[in-house]
Image (cartoon, rainbow, N blue to C red; front, side, top):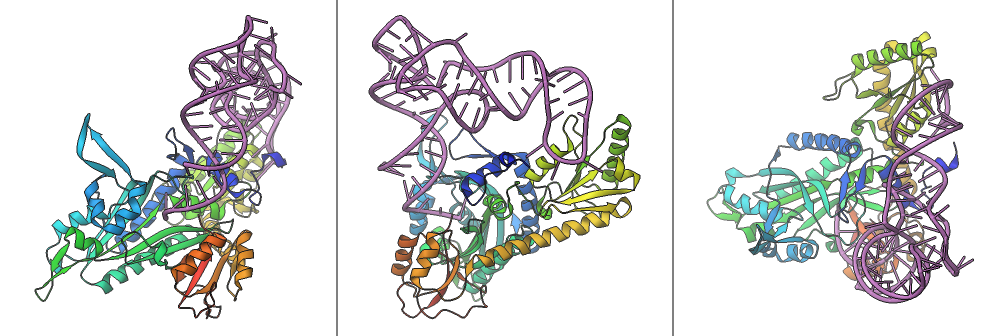
Length: 489
RNA sequence: CGGGACGUAGCGCAGUCCGGUAGCGCACCUGAAUGGGGUUCAGGGGGUCGCGGGUUCAAAUCCCGCCGUCCCGACCA
């Protein structure tokens, strides 16, 4: 392969590599509006599969979908002091409608807590109305200063779950449960390992009691906050008068949770699995699991090969509701493009398995399967194709998670580390560093100032093979918490 | 908002210093051959050189102003 056809090597400039993959694989494009993004069909297909998988999990945990307005009265945002402080600087505000100046400006939702809990207040009277478990798929707007395709755009697609409960403990359990749902999805479907845990107070969601997060490591060793789940306490209930009559006859404010993941996950997918050839999509999320590239010289060969390919599609093909032995397969029958060019194109787009089908294969009743993740080639019999491809896809799915987890482990530091050494590490590519923390905001801010690293999470259960650190990384006082430090997006 | 770079065909760029017919690669269109890892040949279409003003016989090129984009910081799913 000619070197100039390769994508920018990651080591030299990860950002350039990332942009190139996103644009060339036709996942997204820049829009005429600065900071906004167009998601192309190729990228949206991945999002649709993410949506469906997540939605199934939400339904299984008893949540129902609903839809709330795009516009939020500005005064709603102001009711919760911390919330407005956190979000006001990055809102887009509508001041005119129908050619007239509005009496009260409308904020384009940066998140929907306020409007949703205002509605919850109308719907909840009794403890019998609880828990209220709602999710919405929507777009939100946050006026960020600097944007990046998928990772931080002015407008993005996401889901936000919002719940109301009768007790603190029930809300806390819900917060943790949904964090686990995210974790299962990211590892099981995206093959993207994450560290879960609680955010430090300085990184907490504006208006929350506690925020939990899934943190994934990208190939430049930076951390990506891939999903968050918040225990909102009674903060919003109190300002929106969301209260209910308890079983014993008294009144109490409800306890809320909210949790969300966004199209940022697609960026995470690219930065977790992409390589010098392009994108690699884990099979469960791949809009196309297998592409058949026909090979022929003469018209007769062409007819025979395409007919065989069509038979395979009829036998195995399915676009929806995958059943055992069926798969999302398509034939690349384009004329005038050599097979080699097709190989590179589908590899760039990340299709997990390619089938090469030519006259020589047909003569021996076989086909050649090529894995995208390892580029390993293997002939298979046409008779057992369904089983063989399904088995290969499931192996790719598993191997991708294993590979991503190994990479993260190799770039994590779990043993005790001095602050000098920590600074050296963060001066280079960085790492996930497991270290003690005295709990003071001063130490946290000082480290952030000096190394650009932030506390990603106070981890739950990860990194347990290391002995718990006893002293603060920065000041050396007794540690009150264990923290994962990393540079972040 | 501070620091840096850049705006020339859909994309990536050269040309700018030293003013003189608008160029290259990829992509696209037509035709032929080719076809088991990025084909080749021939022909073709596509540009108010970011915008406005100035200097000049003549401006992509020199001067002034503006706008925009990207990168690095502060902010963030």
